[in-house]
Amino acid sequence: MFRFHSPDASSVERFINSQRDRKYSYCHQGKTATTPPEGFQVDHTRVKLGHGIDTFKRAKEALGKWQQFDLGWVTAKPTTTTIREGETVCVIGKAVGMFWLNAARIVYVIDDRLNTPKFGFAYGTLPAHMEMGEERFLVEMDEYGDVWYDILAFSRPKRWIVWLVHPYMRKLQKKFARDSAARMKQLVNEKVQQAA
View 1 (cartoon, rainbow, N blue to C red):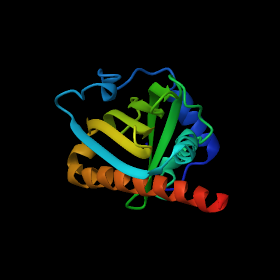
View 2 (cartoon, rainbow, N blue to C red; view 1 turned 180 degrees about the vertical axis):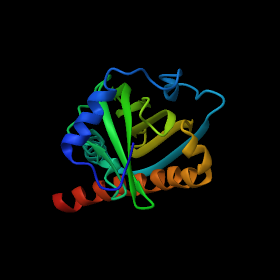
View 3 (tube, rainbow, N blue to C red; view 1 turned 30 degrees about the vertical axis):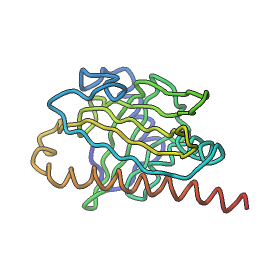
View 4 (cartoon, rainbow, N blue to C red; view 1 turned 135 degrees about the horizontal axis):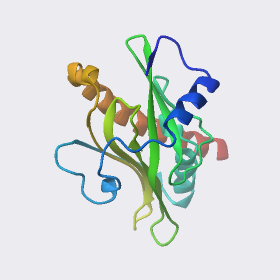
């Protein structure tokens, strides 16, 4: 759904309610947890955020508040959406002077607190989304104590307009991954400085 102005909270709520009971727009739910399916563009971004359990906790908190989307040109609404399987969220993008609303639902959640902690979730596209596919957001601490932010997505255009501007949309997808990784680094570092 395209708009020439940023949607207010009531518009976002109506949009989410219109999508809440709809089926996914693709048939490969959960494949970001195993092997992405053929026929989709796969994107993978992995960046080191820092070291230690405190860094992991800060990254987990940011992910839990949807702050990886707080990019200026992309946002997820509402930011109070619980990270729980079945929850629906609106991802709002802005480009070429227009805003577009995309609906997605959380497919699965990862919350492993043992040994090498991991936290994250994947969401899948609903009918009111420009693309079809799934994206997983994960923060994890490896056996050496390093903390990583990992995005894995598979997608392909769903609407004719996206097919027409596919090279531009691919640039936006890659920009989102870079900007999201930079945002997570910034959030973790800000919390370190505040604690000092």
